Image 1 (cartoon, rainbow over the protein chains, first blue to last red):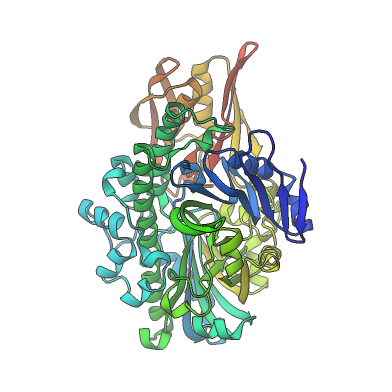
Image 2: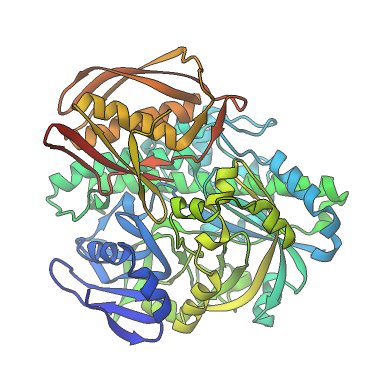
Length: 478
Length: 141
């Protein structure tokens, strides 16, 4: 494969064959060598072949082999000639990350760390058929969740207005239509609101280990030694079913609109076609379900900490720093060439990273830029970044989303044979509770890239700026 | 399953399987067994007592395989049934009529290994080579 160096953190796959635009990969040279080992670069090229793609098919440093679109991919499409694709969003619609700050120094909770993890594991449902014992959702409630997102949860007493001001899009994507969501998707999701799910989803308690940008950290309410909590989950079975339903529709639509597909999973339809509009309406509803999901989990995190630490809400000071989507398609204004135009930005395993002064950044962050939350693996660290003007200019205001897998699940299992991962992490001071031993093994830290390399690459490329590093103290895995 | 009748494909983020069967019916059944084997470890000698009819349609034979597995996954996700016995009454290129038998997920009898979010069309293949049918399916984990 022909790859040209643009600079130390940016590489170009020149347009060739059926590609309509170049492929651009953000990574260090060392990371690129790993990236080239699987099929993710081919997937960047495949996306570059889709109709109406604008500027380039982009990949962030945490890119890895996905299905159809690569994980860590960003692609924007022209509103008239472009397409929208469920494969460009993924099955877990609005999978995302929420960071909660507290007023507590982490050293004050170290003795109760195991108790906190055990209680979180009990209070936040994980595993097959799990749902919260105090909560059921009626058909009408579900319709409202799909329409209103986190606003519904707050309206029902799961949080307050201040929470909504610290969520991407205020916790509600406009244009959601519950009627575009099939009964099957609703059936799959109705018992899953407020549940964590499995795989790489988690709730983690952390300590702020290092501050890189004092001003930005202070605006976010972060300080060195502070206890924080990160929630990583998405739209659960409801989102998966929306994706399934619409991939089937898009397979037929791709034939109808005569769109050549290098991979069936890239199936799509013109943005303004009936199929495209319906997918967006359903996807937005799925995204709203995910916002409400993280809001409910936030509520149970608050309740759990109040109970275990015997403290009231005012003393705990638990509040969201921000909540970002990393599997989403959105209509956004961007400068392309010399003019501003609306495009449909697909981020699949990529995070929005808007700069300071952008009108869509919450007022409180308008001077520093939008917070970007980058979880790492469960043994090392996570990062808080902010978006930059350069991201606006080069990546449609996007950056990385996490560490990115380096190793297959099978390889991770092989690596862990004979090892007790929970005991190893406990020795490092990290308490882990997983729904199954298998999950913990497959999520072993070595299976992931070092998220510090990923973050250094986006910082080196200038598409994000480092604010703080968080180290894990305890984690529950679905 | 005592003997693995499928091969796991090493995919960075997800898991795929390769299965084979003497005919398409057998292949579809092997793929269903493999999918549940990837998700759940069951204790031996359990009785599958709940029967679920399964009817699916698709535009192409390979897409029908995905639809069949998607339907079984849907039953697992909504009814929490671990399906272990699969029956195909009628199979054409674009439709399948059959059933599956299983039991409710029970922590004492089953261990959840990993949740499959979805059955994807990525790198999907279904073909006859010699006397045997082969398929490849990638799951989103």
